[in-house]
Image 1: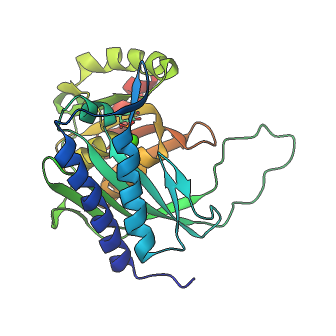
Image 2 (image 1 turned 180 degrees about the vertical axis):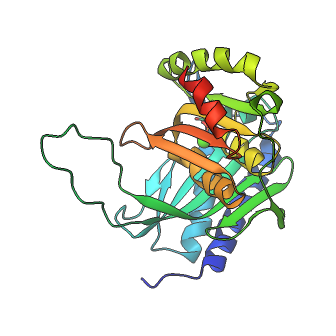
Length: 277
Ligand code: IPD
Ligand code: CA
């Protein structure tokens, strides 16, 4: 497959994100069918419907690019390009009628595998290497669309955005996320306790992709979470980097789970120090 044109790919991702967003907007106040729930998470029938809309839209333009999605994955996973899709990021907000949720779509390219380590060494977690080529995050409730093409500026509704210039943690707003399991709670509660007295404000908004685009736009100065999944952060991570920020994500397993530290770059060392304890 010859490499499709980046701007066309971006247009396709924007079109898919807007289509899912339209369905989200229409259903914000509707009674929603819950497919499954546990204490810390809900899966809605609308998650799947939005994913299907995105899949249909992307595959109509690019039938050969596989899709790794929160709700399902389709196509040959060994293709050199893959879409990484979170149809609804912030599902719990959306389920409760809170208008803070979004659609997140990234396009990733598979990179050559790094040389194998010598046998006998403890095996570090090394998911197949991919790099993100483009990212789209769409908040249908605020009608805010963030886009980025690797190497270019990050844009919000077409206008370039940049991270904040705040360099003091005690003047910063830091967003924190609690992923879905008790392990994430156990890891992040001490971090929350250490951070609260050190920052201006903590925010827990419940949509990782928006936390990243808020850092990219200078609204937040940092965002930390542990146990976050790739589809929540792939698009927002590139948008943040293109906005001049620092997107540090370390794999916790080979199942697309990460420990994340995202900042404007200027407060990174202070934030990392407090996080480490
Ligand atoms: C969740 C949200 C939340 C974050 C969780 C994610 P979902 O994604 O992004 O903010 O704290 O870790 O799983 O389930 O709403 O797509
Ligand atoms: Ca989701």
